[in-house]
Length: 205
Image (cartoon, rainbow, N blue to C red; front, side, top):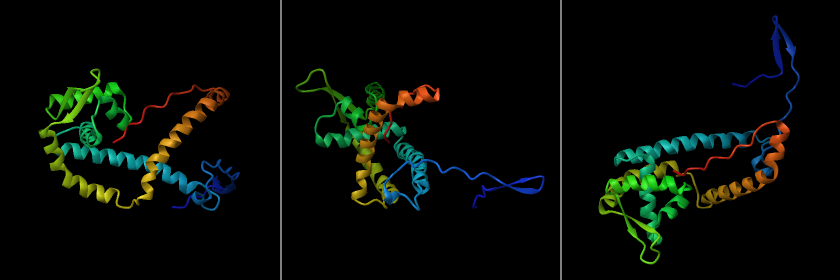
């Protein structure tokens, strides 16, 4: 339904309202502006939050199929895939999923207690522990794969090879945001009379 903002009713009589001031643009790329407005872009950004919520629900569903919580499933399959590139440590998993080392240790210990992964000393660096998926863990992942494939084909079927660059561009945008925040956040917050907050670390599904 189209919103009417320029007329209000007072005692049954229409009264003209002061026209709203256009909000400052939040993007400058002409390709992302429609008629000089970033309204469509803002809609896309806000829809991403809905996408994240639905993706988290899908992750929980994948985990439930094999009797795991969503984050346990994510960490198990991450260890499996990272192992194709070499030894996998807790730090490797934490960096891959953008999680803290402490949180990653807690979840890997749960997987260890369920017999889904093993921890062994690194052959060279004795300070490190190598994580490997056990045969039982691999069997669970293999059993889930046909369901996971069908769901992923639907969820990400609209993406092209070029659009995979979205992940990389998001990481670059986060780095830029941190840099600009360090330069500008304190002066802006002080001017507005507020208090600067530290962003929470993002978890990846």
